[in-house]
Length: 219
Ligand SMILES: *[C@@H]1O[C@H](CO)[C@@H](O)[C@H](O)[C@H]1NC(C)=O
Image (cartoon, rainbow, N blue to C red):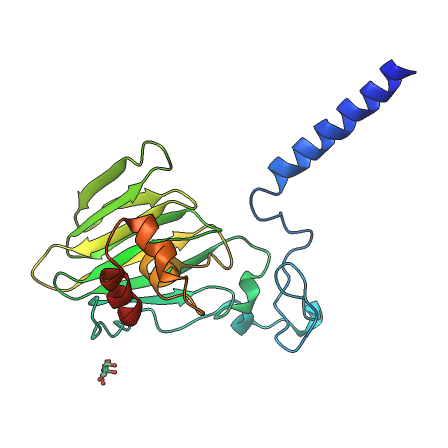
């Protein structure tokens, strides 16, 4: 009897484990497509499908990635996203893309995508790119990219790109989620709403309170 109970426990643990693996990435579609229905108020994981009979080519279409993003900001970079918010047909398909523009020395500051691996290619200019591995190594994996080069940023890892050329730089990147999400490190830590208590940040970053308060006013 006990042996049987153990067997059942082992089986249920195994099933749990298999499903944990299966849901580590976006689930596979169960139909050809599921165009996001922007009128639905139902809360599901992703977006509700609209009636497939109402599908149009425009549900899979976006125009405008030939246009440079406005880099007149303190970082000197601009990300133009093309995800399920721009293309409703991306719903359930586990993929999206961005165009990134960089002014000379422009920076796409350290950030992570909680739901996507990113594969980036340089269309114009030269970029210094990098990502940092998780604790305890926190190894920086970094490289200088030229036009036509491709680099991968693994899911969840903190990464950045900086234009090291004298002209503008442009990159295109694909991401393995319909909605990759962005967590900018500086904004999340020093710009949360409401703010994280400054004594928490002074302890975490081992700096004076006035340094933390200055960073909190910036972000
Ligand atoms: C770019 O952004 C800056 C700052 O927000 C703004 O002043 C400027 O008009 C924008 N340029 C264009 C072409 O939209």
